[in-house]
Amino acid sequence: MPEPEQRSYYVTTPIYYVNAAPHLGTAYTTIAADALARYQRMCGRDVLFLTGLDEHGQKIEEAASAGGQTPQEWVDALAPTFTDLWDQLAVSHDRFIRTTEADHIRAVQTLAQQLYDSGDIYPGTYQGWYCVPDEAYWAESDLEMPVAAAAPAPLCPDCGRPLRYVEEENYFFRLSSYQDWLLALYEQYPDFIGPETRRNEVVSFVRGGLKDLSISRANVKWGVPLPWDTSHTMYVWFDALINYISAVGYGDKRRFAEFTRRWPANLHLVGKDIIRFHCVIWPAMLHAARLPLPERIFAHGFLLTKGEKMSKSKGNAADPATLVARFGVDGYRYYFLRDVNFGADGSISDEAMLQRYNGDLANDWGNLCSRLFNMVGKYCGGVVPDPQAGECAHGCADGCTQEGEELRAIAAGLSERVDAAFARCDFAAALEAVWDLVKATNRYLETSAPWTLAKAAEDSPEHARLQAVLYAALEACRIVALYTAPVLPNTAAEVHARLGLPALDCSSTAARAGQLPLEQAAAWGGLPPGNPVTVGDPLFPRLES
Ligand code: MSP
Image 1: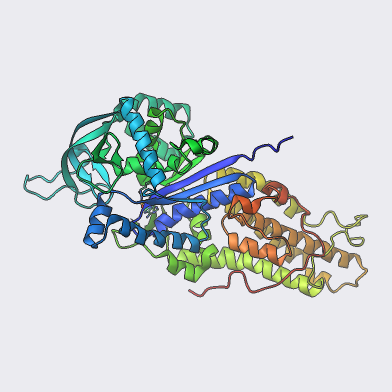
Image 2: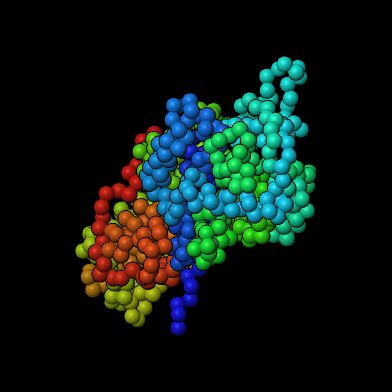
């Protein structure tokens, strides 16, 4: 019988503007998507995790020319600032797309032509305001217009920079004709947009009425030419959104099987500032092209420093590399996913990061491993003890089956709790669930006091209990490592190595091949007695403030 086909999971981040250096905000979405991708791989799914770069548009054209380079030279020079940082943050994308790739350009043209042929795109005149840094059109009704005619231009409601007045012949997408269809979609699939606050925001925006969208620029050369009128280039957002399908072979007959297998995506992760593009324009484009819609779009909030959105333009965007140097890759990833409620805005600070690092990582988790592994070295000759050896203090006939009951119960409940949390993109809840096991294991060591049991004679029930206690605590650590691997990939791999287990690697679907899916891998009793246990350096050395 053929193997049942492995279920596939497709998750995306936005493709970032190549000209803005990656910062904590862009790293935030990327790490969250990475944790989801790693989690799904741990569960045994065939994952495609897509991220990449948005490389066309007026602001790139202008920046390149100011820098005395061609736009292509400019974007080629900038692209590695992203890929380098993602490598540094252990981001395990399966595909890195750049909108200047030939396949993407072809896909954009295919889709545009199809919408033109179906009458969804028509020529017209655009008169209005445009934000070059955000590449966004603004209606006057959304703006605070300067009073005097000679006054400077209105400011962008999003980024606060001056808008430019644009008057040109453009092509338009009939977005307005999809208003009722969109409202019915949101109604029928309440989970299409998450969290609920964002869904409500999108619904009321669409209820307010949709205007047709200008999708071409006549005076911008750096973009995808419209196939039927090459004097125009595609509006950069229209171009960018199509990356989610061009990456999986849309428009390429030779990749049809891949396309039908991967698309629709399971999840688009985005920031809350770009939900209109993803939850209104994108579904309408797909529907007009008779393509299936993504299963879910989830918008996270902003990272705030001192109450303000962090951004390059405000000059308050911290450099991720500095924080990684201090807290390590896993420390960095843990902080943002544990301390900020994904979906809401979250204030971040050095103090809070230090507190999480020292409290949760150094004290709770790192310290648990180091004192436990030390005890195994001291009392069990540095190997995983056999919990079944000898009669125990409970009087269990064939080795102790009662030790660590609470740990077993918590471990058994993790699969459901963690899975539900990941499904809601609630990373904090997933980590909190695993920390219940970390904390319970620390308490268990305190109450069962292996150091006292170790004083008993070798053939005594107390000595047998010592083996069972240390085994239960080690087993809890193995399970914690499995469940934290999506967020703390390096530490999880290190803990498994120190327990003498095969490599724990969820950085690609291939790396997980032949491994048990998470729930089975985490079944109690998977740690083989006799495995060598290595103490090693502290996993998270304490940091001073
Ligand atoms: N190129 C478009 C996306 C096209 S997707 C088809 C774009 N790029 S961007 O470089 O501006 O990146 C934006 C992403 O970073 C958004 O998801 C945005 O919400 C996120 N962030 C930028 N600053 C942020 C914070 N301060 N906090 C959290 N995320 C924020 O938009």
